[in-house]
Amino acid sequence: MASKNNEVILSLISHTNVGKTALARTLLREDVGEVADRAHVTVVSEAYTLLEADGRVARLWDTPGFGSNLAKLAKRLRASKNPVGWILHQVWDRLRDESLWCSQEAIRNIQADADVVIYLVDASQSPDTVGYVDLEMEILDWIGKPVLVFLNQVGEPDPDRIRNEEEEWRTHLKDHGVVKSVSTLDAFTRCFIREHLILEKAAESLEGEKGKTARKLTDALVKRNLEVFQQSVDSMASLMAFSLADTEALREKSLLEKLQSFIAFNEKDDEMENIQQKMYERLAERTASTINELISIHGLDGETAQELTQSSKEEFAVRRDVEESLAATVGGAVSGLVGGLSADLLSGGMTFGGGAIVGMVLGGATTYALAKGYNLTQTGNNMVRWTEAQFQSQVEFLSMLFMAVSHFGRGRGLWQDPENNPAHWETAIHEQLEIDKDKWNSLWKKGGASAKVEKLEKALKREMRELLSSALVKIYPDLKDVF
Ligand SMILES: Nc1nc2c(ncn2[C@@H]2O[C@H](COP(=O)(O)OP(=O)(O)O)[C@@H](O)[C@H]2O)c(=O)[nH]1
Ligand SMILES: [Mg+2]
View 1 (tube, protein in one colour):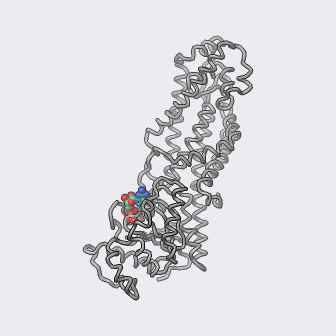
View 2 (cartoon, helix red, strand yellow):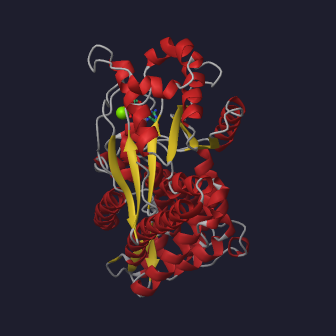
């Protein structure tokens, strides 16, 4: 039965165990079916609503896929005048002939229901080494519906390697007229902002009203995903505005006290320890809740592990070392110029965190804070706030976190904090941060005790959106039409 013009029906097909159900979960943001590392976990085809918009609907069928025993029928099928009809008329026992029964079920689904076949391949194997692909492709040729090939199981997303693998598959499948495209949509590591590819490619391979429906649905999916993107940006900007405006008061100190504490910068300062503790706690709590918010915005389950909050503290600790060594250098220079300031310091011979060294030399409390590695700096009269270096590391941390969450597919299971992120993500973020470094610097300057938080948050949203969308377009050039 042909589907209606306001519907686009996608059937997920592959050799069994390649990851159809995992991809269905990722796309649907729901734990449908059963996923396990063995053949024929899914034995009946099932339809799910991928997207509904303006009276149009995209449906996704998860099918049992092709089984290994199909190969035994290769000769017979190739000799038959109507191989598909032949398969569909066989009576196989669901338990005894599970592999054939499942293949038949998948073929029936394509024949009866599909507008487009989404054929998944295991990218961890080269197409020339997987024996089952050719016969499965022949069957798809016989059925004749458009086939969109997507690489799954690509491992760590590496654009160059993936482009090569796609090319390899394209070459291998070039004689199959039904294959309309070869792209990548990995159940575990795809970026959600590219999920519309599945409908975009469908639109390109469908004609008339169906094609139009698929195009409208593509637009609707892009819109929905951009909303998720914006919510993520908003959530991160709110955390950033909070920490830019977060301050603690310092006890009034005499000039002498300030001087003493500066010179004795290796000694512990209870007041600063206390303040730092309070500010870390607030920041750690807000950071963890922001991460959990991002996880949930992306339709994932699970929470960040406590370690991450801890490790963001470690991350700050790394910065401390830098500050301490710098402080030591300056400290040495400073002993000779206590009341004054060396000209080459001011002229920018040494800069750290956009003028922090100048701040260090000028303000007793600030100096002390930095020298001890508190990551706090003076703001207004006797107040401290986070340093610019800390802000920079927060921007980087949140950007990398967003990259990790936006690539984490639900089919992979509960959220896990990333251990290693692909190096090209970091490169893309850093390149963009470098381009806009003046803007970030001026945002930091707007923080502190007198910060206008709402205005600051708005500006942070704008900048964060720019940063992440530019980085994503660098990584996936085809996204430039989306943002
Ligand atoms: N590394 C990796 N493993 C995957 C991916 N998709 C599925 N898997 C694993 O492959 C196995 C089979 O997945 P499943 O979705 O049940 O395959 P199906 O038989 O095609 O539905 C499971 O162990 C999944 O966790 C993927 O994109 N990457
Ligand atoms: Mg399955």
